[in-house]
Amino acid sequence: MGGHVILRTDRSEGRGKVAVAYRDPHKHGGMNLTSQKLKDLLNAAIAREVQVSVQYMWQHVQWMGVDHYAVSDKFRDIAVEEMKHAEKIAERLWYLGGVPTTKPAPINVGGELWEMVDNDIKAELEAISLYKKIEKAADAEADPTTRFIFEEILEQEEDHHDFFTSLKEKGKKK
Image 1 (cartoon, rainbow, N blue to C red):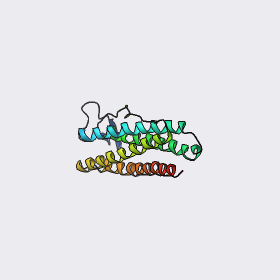
Image 2 (image 1 turned 90 degrees about the vertical axis):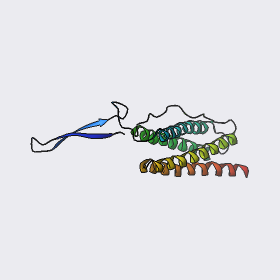
Image 3 (image 1 turned 60 degrees about the vertical axis):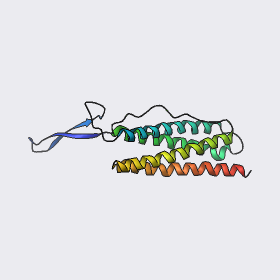
Image 4 (image 1 turned 120 degrees about the vertical axis):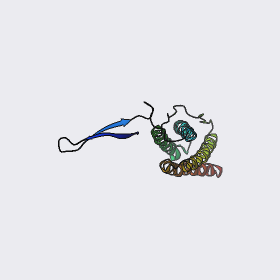
């Protein structure tokens, strides 16, 4: 996270010594590397990732019935993956001079099994839409790193959407 700035080099003893200071973009008038619009979008992404990581983990715990063992672990795995997304996005936002949110978007666990799946499909569609918007904003600000991060995350979100929609289709066939 952050970065470093070379303050000076010292060659008095024949070997170069470099003094390095780590900068904190939040202190002493640090750097502002992106627009407030992109920072706000990144915070919306963090809130969403925290939301679904909790949502999917609770669904993993609450899932009951015959299919429990077939899919419960997948809910847990997706929840962990979503938390890793939140971490990666927060690190990027911090580097860009923003402050990551600690507040999740509204959590919709659902009561019945298929209500849970419908909530999850909706959450993944919202993520896909938001992350495409973030990619466009990153392009507009000539920020290939943020774009690359969201290309990777978007691919995983599409996989999650596929899992939930496939699960729903399987449920309809019963």
